[in-house]
Image (cartoon, rainbow over all chains, first blue to last red; front, side, top):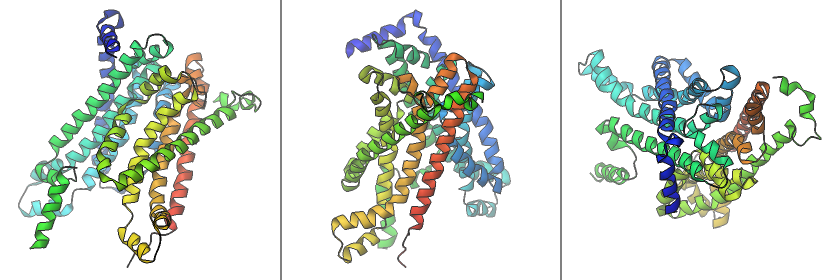
Length: 238
Length: 217
């Protein structure tokens, strides 16, 4: 086991294997779609959230988004656009749009109009309401959507190698045919898995960071639930 | 597009023709669901019974889920070669994540008052499980099966990379032989299969729901 790990480290350090280059490729293949899908999905979400067309989009997208297998999304780009970086990025962007769009819509919808009313009653201007009430309330849900999209994109990125976009998937593809020495395969697989984990935990921390303190106290987290139950019991005892 | 229309590809005597690849894909999906459920149900009931198991089981399942599918499949080759097991093990593993969480949530969602009523009516433990808990939890469980079925159909598309032929073969061959119409054919068939299965199971789910969510007034 230690031997294998040493082999992997040796593999990474060997410049012939271009690990740094592949890493850059993977990061590019992942970050570009995440940014683009946010750029596309968030404005659309904000626009349609309070309109009936929003509900329609939501239900259609959740159905479609689940039914179309991701590999199909990637390969269907080949006849249309070709192979390489661009079709992979386009496919991954499309993959990331549904979670972000749906969560933007839901985040805006979940803002209790009574809260906005109360704020207006307190004399807040429209801009103050936007900045101090609506955005902070919407942000956690949006962050959750971005997190889901990001992890999905990172987890699917090795498949981009199948259509010629490079990245860690290249190590996996090459490693499949090499039955004698699993090092290349392991380096590819472990790198992607670690990247996916890092994305998941990193964005989870970000999500917690953008959750307003008041909202955070209400969330049914594993540790917070006991405090919540204790708090609920008090008024009843009184 | 032409690939779909060429009759040679639908030849039932050729084991690599479309109908066979289709059935292979169904077979893999069905097997995954069967094994997945057989494993998930006991684990889920254990988790419901002993709530302390909840966190460790969910964490283990989440870790499994983070392993990107392609990487998992590729690694399985080292252990099981290019056999059916190579595609089945990862598929079943991914299925567990959704199924266990889903079954646990479904069983927990059953109104305990109804269980009380059943016990008051004199039902035995087994009867309670079968007639009350299971029948009420079934629609939610079917919803979970739906998600797993569609995801499995998707990941199974990678079959040819690990030696199992199914509808993914159309895509695999298409890419490596540069035949665009084959890629399109594969994409259309797989998506059609996924959507059909999704709608079918949705129908089943709705049917089960209508069977009665009894509300105690």
